[in-house]
Length: 80
Image (cartoon, rainbow, N blue to C red; front, side, top):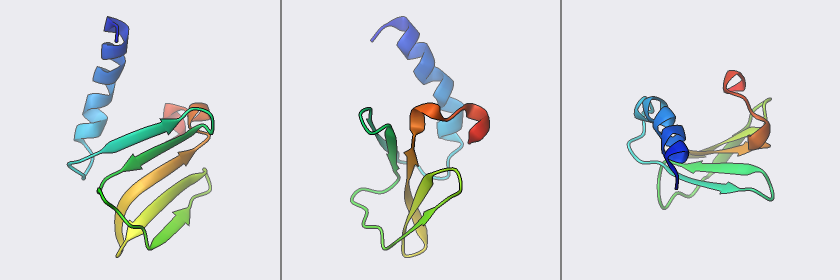
């Protein structure tokens, strides 16, 4: 990982620290262009919601346990 990569991660820090969740796991499937973000491990969703901007919100007993962002590479900061 080069210095440029580290700077990109550092730009994420304020947003991550502003989340209400203290734990965050991510996985990006480049082939499918899907970004998975989990706030609970293990998490077993019992309900989901698909938003108009192709984001799937996963719930377990009315608690948000993760989100899935479809077409993630096409999202811009202003879209979220």
